[in-house]
Image (cartoon, rainbow, N blue to C red; front, side, top):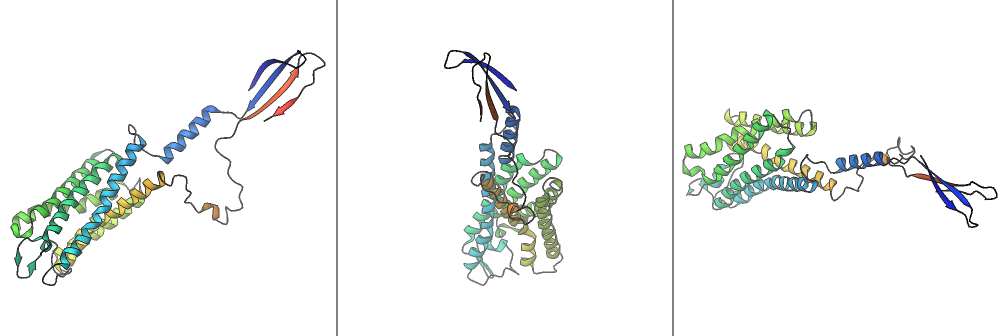
Length: 301
């Protein structure tokens, strides 16, 4: 592209300035910057990156805190007046509000409050991450099962085992079944989009189903089989929440940090550095006099 401009020399003679601009593509530059912005800050259409990052922060934090459920079990079991066996005694025994022979839990308030908090955290994480699940029938099933799991987990703390077998199992059983189904659906739903998440979900679902089968078949002690069936979901939530927070940190706090080891690979170490996607404009200015006697000068920038 050439631009002509008329000017006058120091002696008053008229000269013509010719500006040639090469490799200057403003539209291409805009597209490249827009593409880089999309990769660095992925977000759903209709939401700002800040709102989307806030959703990830809340959901990831909520699910990471589910790991505290395991710590609450250890703390409550340590307060028992009689020895508590994680292999033989059930989880529900930690929440009994009465003190009987073989089942006395002085810190039952801690365990029951943890059940309620775990239900709230489960629902909170699912609601804030549901926008990033592809719409369809499977999404509705996943959200419905997440609500069932959250309500059932909270109800386990509100209706402890000493309130009656029917009442307690009516609160426990829906979440006991739904947790395995939702992990299978997540693995199926994410198989073609996020293979690592699908494999992690499938592994947790497999461990939970095996534990449930061993518990119902009385092949293991009740406490061990129950934990093998129920622990995979809190572990899945904690690991997935940590992955969400790590991804958020890479997009925000460490967006200018390169985590790849590719530059140090022996095959790529000798390669020439890649050219930037946006090349700087090159301009050349030529002064061409229209009358004789005027010297021409060329300046390149």
